Length: 73
Image 1 (cartoon, rainbow, N blue to C red):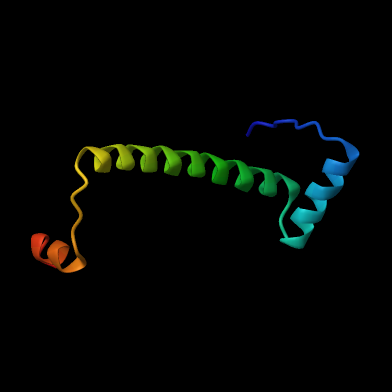
Image 2: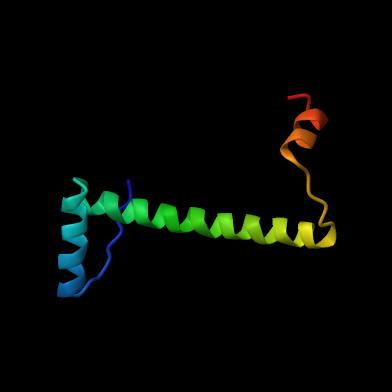
């Protein structure tokens, strides 16, 4: 297991510890969760950007009923 050090000032340390305590998790877990969520958000934004590009090339939309018929749902 690797150990990563994060330097914070006193205000940040107080804020981060308060947040972790409020949610009943360790400071380490709070940092990991926050970073993972940030990475997931960036992937979601990239996926959305790609979907928007595809939609702008072909702006055809489908109703829910059309999709059900198309995919036999």
